[in-house]
Image (cartoon, rainbow, N blue to C red):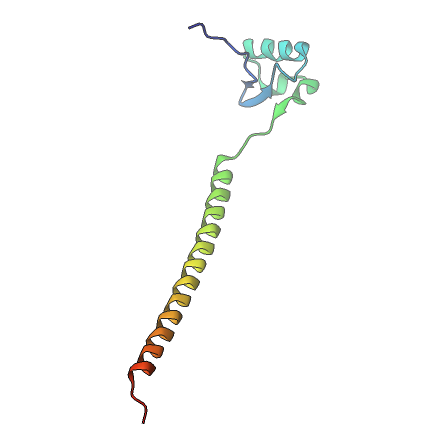
Length: 107
C-alpha cells in the first residue's frame, strides 16, 4: 500500500521552533529551511522570520493545570458521594424509627 508523505509544519533552529509550509508563504518556509540547513544561531535569524516562531509550551504547566482540574473534579465527586451517603443514612434511620414505632405497643 503506497504511503503519502506530508511536509512538516515546523522546524527547530537553535532551540526555537518555527512554523513552515501550509499557512506560511513558500518564500518564508524556504528562508527558514536554508537557515536550518546552515545550522544558524537564533541571533542570526532576520526579524521578519521571527514572526513565525511558535511560543514554547511548558508541559509542566499543562500537567499542573490538568492535575488541578482532576483534583477539583475528584473533590466535587467526593462531596456528591458524601451527600448521597448522608441522605441514605437519614432514610435508613427514618425507616428504622418507623419500624420501631410500628413494633412498639402503645399503652
